[in-house]
Image (cartoon, each protein chain N blue to C red):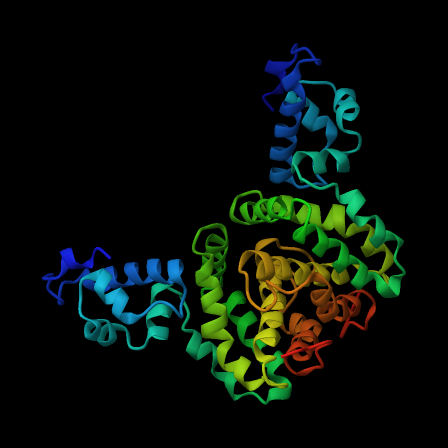
Length: 202
Length: 202
């Protein structure tokens, strides 16, 4: 967009990294994950695409860096990807509830809350669908084409738990140990992931 | 609080009604539904409690008026209260999805969204637990003491549907006709309302 005026900036400048992140966040929020390219971000930031890759790796990595999560989702999701498909609901809940409850959970909740309110709501959608649930959608795509619906239903129960437990603080859910919340809701998630979907038409 | 300075204001003044609503909203947000009395609101607004009752009826009615919902929840919930307990999940979903999808739905969603972001998050909690789910909690309190947990779980799935369908616009849920969303999620709600709760201890 306004990138041309900035070419000539030296790649090594310490604020280049920050500028790429700022541009990336704006782009991802405005046009979504799929329609945003590393090239367009590089152009906006007035740098070469290769430099963006050098600093941040893949588009997925750049997205994660741009939303400044205090926890690395790749690490959090590792046990989920390793779980058997018939225990995926339980594994997903256990992994995500641990993030909200412990390591930097408050920062995650605060980020989520401010994104909901603002114009950047698309960032949550991208995060959920491309970072957390994309691999899972492929695994549960049975019958073929049902994967996106299955993970959308999972997103509805998970995001609602975040809302009631951590933002609205509705008791007794708010004060309950995570393992009890898992026991109460894993069956719902597992049903959405691998159960029968009424009237499903691909 | 600062009410005494205002006593003497004539009750009939056209802005008295607005002033009561403004004070009520502030009070409910600050101290919650249970700990807020009509008397304290009247004192803050510099009017007599009888005038508050005259204008607004019960505390519940005043609360509903103070959050300025574009739809009357008593009317919306009538078919839910009339439904058999074993169809409560379906009735609740059908009633609430109709509000979001049709009559003033966008205003409801916008109100919800701005409340989540702001300091008034307690208003959503009060609305959910005292206006929408209180009567239902009594009906499904089996075993005794499980009612609050059952409706908290219902709140988690319902609020998550609002979030994914109307705020995050996650497909295919976002564009799906309401009756299909009901078919996909009524079983979850019904399970939370009347199904077995693992490890429940009253």
